[in-house]
Image 1 (tube, rainbow, N blue to C red):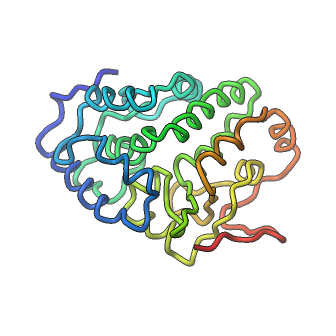
Image 2: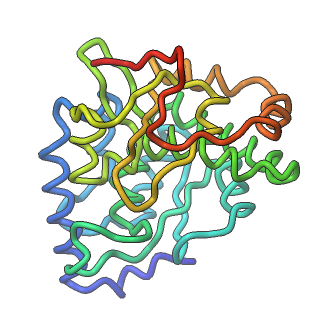
Amino acid sequence: CAQDYAAYAAQDHDTYRRLYARQEALLPGLACDEFIAALPSLGAKDRIPRFDEINERLHKATGWEIVAVPGLIPELPFFTLLANRKFPVTDWIRKPEEFDYIVEPDVFHDLFGHVPMLFDPTFADYVQRYGQGGLKAHDLGAGEKLARLYWYTVEFGLIRQPDGLRAYGAGILSSVGELQHAVRSNDPHRLPLDLLRAMRTRYKIDSYQSSYFVIDSFAQLFGMTAPDFTPLYERLATEPDIEAGVVLPGESEVTG
């Protein structure tokens, strides 16, 4: 759909402004360097940005563009958009009474959480590769398993920087509570990213995550997803799921 910019009320812009200001203040020491460097590319902080203005900068940086959607979209169109370097961004924004929590992603989550990382060339290439792999997974009936990889990387991924663990996942970066929980809390388990392990692991949709997966670099993430996933899907079909928050015997957790 087109972004109906005129439909945003003054209250909507104020909600975006307050969300942006609160979240930006939390980023130092918690968000990855690439995200912090790219955040100014979103443009205005005091109002909901215009998608076409962001696209001028984004396309020049990595060849991506954002497209407006009315809400969550089905698996196949989602994969198709990503495979063509188009990222779906919800055009509606939460109500003031939903300021701290929403059930489905809104324009603040999508813009603030996802779009800055698309300015990083390596991460942007990973997201496209994920979309291309998603089209194949859909044909093989493995879309649900692959969705877990998206959850544990694009939405809730952690990266190990020289100065400690940092968040790069949009679900973390756009959440006032989960940002501290994911990076600093002693409660969740943090494991090195293993593709099979991540795609076997269930996740939580109604609370902070109890399991996170950690990468050492975006180049590592991109390289891990280069091989054909068909053998992985065959293994996944024979191995049981793992509940979130479980550490298997022999697994070593990542520390800051």
